Every structure is written in C-alpha cells, then in structure tokens.
Image (cartoon, rainbow, N blue to C red; front, side, top):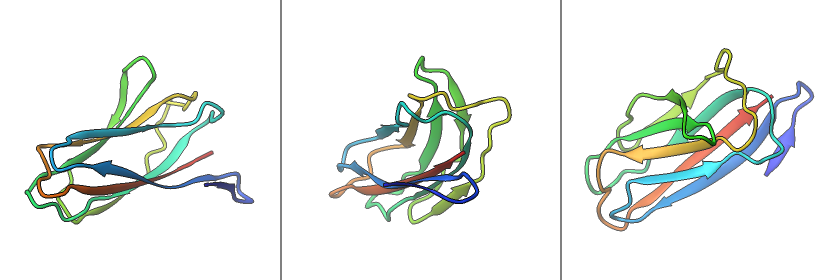
Length: 117
C-alpha cells in the first residue's frame, strides 16, 4: 500500500519477507516509478529458533551496495532514518535482509516498511 502525506512523504506499507527454516537472504525491489530519497527504512525481526542476526542493506540494480546497517538480534525492531546524502533512489533498488545463519524451526517473517520523498 502506498500513500502520500501532505509533506510529500510516501509510505510503502509493510512488506513481510517470509524466511523458511533454512533461508538466509530475502529482498524486495523498490517500484520502478519511485525516484527521490529513501527517507526511512524500518524492519522488525522475529524471535527465531536459532540465535541469528539480521542485517538490512540497500543495493542499486547493478549490485552496488549504497547502505549496510548494523546486524540486529532476534526480536529487534529497527528504525533507520537514512537519508543517504548523494544517494538518490532512481527506481529498481533492492532492500535486502541477510541473516547470519539459518533461523531454524519454521522460520518467520521480517517485516519491512520504507518511506520516500
């Protein structure tokens, strides 16, 4: 879901990245009609069976990494107010969550929400 505030901020409503018990990487692609600044990116990490961390990164369509966050433990909710200076979003960027290992059990969902302007 996408909505625009009176201040020109777009909210790209929550997206669940579903990890199975052995998955370690999931991603979502920013829609092709989005151009501007990625103002904020939030994500929440479930309480996995195993003690693994989750790291958020943002990559250009050509694979160039423009942001890598700090690894976060299970059960964490993270808010990044990123506003990448000099790193505009030109559509097609990938928001990626990488786990430090297999989450175990039946996995779980990492929920990502981002805001742009």
